Image (cartoon, rainbow, N blue to C red; front, side, top):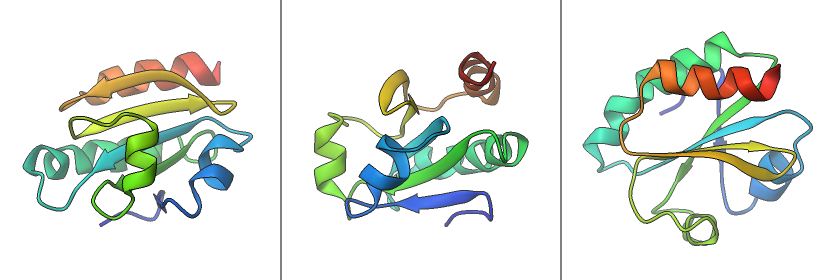
Length: 110
């Protein structure tokens, strides 16, 4: 599912890994059956590699982690949310380009 630079976030670890993170966190809300989600995976992997050490990148399986998906009102997948200091800074719904994600990450890491 995930590459070496992409973590798995769950209902159990979301608060500690994302909300309380001292670094920005990019979270990909996805599901196994979702074809656009699968198409986004190489982009998420590439961004995770490029921003390794500066940004935490991870995925939330919305089928297995419904509480977190409901908490952030995930109505369509893929949805990618950028968090900084526990706050939502940017939200992308649908297939998103690497350029758009990179631009948003550069804004929060400057």
